[in-house]
Amino acid sequence: MNKGELIRYAEEQLVATKQFPVFKAGDTVTIKYKITEGNKERIQAFQGIVLQISGKGANKTFTVRKISNNIGVERIFPVSSPFVEAVEVNKRGVVRRSRIFYLRQLRGKKARIKEKKY
Image 1: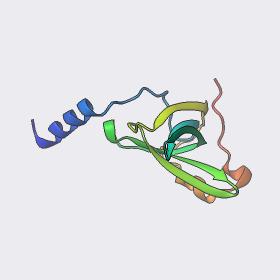
Image 2: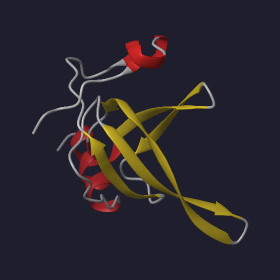
Image 3: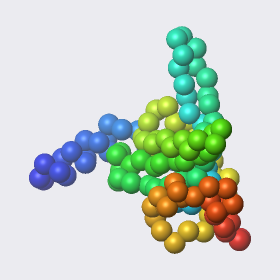
């Protein structure tokens, strides 16, 4: 085994991965995120459009963007984070790219994504 394989094996053994529904760029998701304030814990929901999914295995992350008070807010969530409680897919979007950064320049109705018909 070379060094890369050993590191990958150790990551798979040590990091507990949760099972989330399958989603991709363009989908609207709600992430239930655990926040600790002092000695209290609460769960906060972050709903937005998935811009990209990057990485593999334990290092996999996804970026979610939402508009809050006319300001674009993006947040990067690690899939293997213990703070991510659940991921819920609200809408399936139809986009032709895996990284939809062009959405950052669009506002209002132009920023809409077509919904996938079932």
